[in-house]
Amino acid sequence: MHILRRLWLPATLLLYALLAASTLVGQHGLLHLQELYQEQRALEAEAFTLTRANADLRERINRLKTDDEFLEKVAREELGFVGKGEIVYRFRDAGDAAGR
Image (cartoon, rainbow, N blue to C red; front, side, top):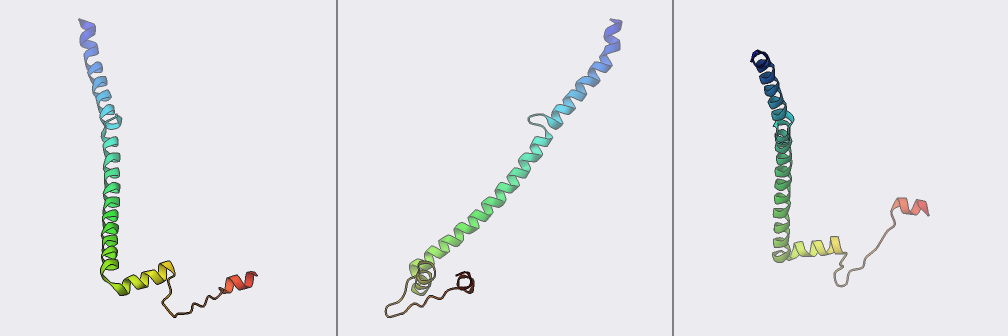
C-alpha cells in the first residue's frame, strides 16, 4: 500500500506526459491537423484557379460559337489558316539564318 501511494504521482505524471505527446505528434495529433489545414488551403487555391480557368475556357467557347471575327483570328493564329486569295510569305529568323 505504501509503494502504491509513492508511485501514484509519478505514474500519473507519466500518463499525462504520454497523453500530451500523443496529442501533439500522434496519428491524429495537432501537427497532423496543421498539415491537413495547409493541404486544404493549397487544394482550395488550386480549385479556385481551375474554376477561373474553366470560366475563361467557357467564355472562349462562347466567343468561338458567336463571334466570327474571333473565330477567324484563332483559325489564323493557332491553325495557320489563310484566307482565299492570300499569299503567305515565310521568313527565316535571324538565328536560323546565322546557324546555316
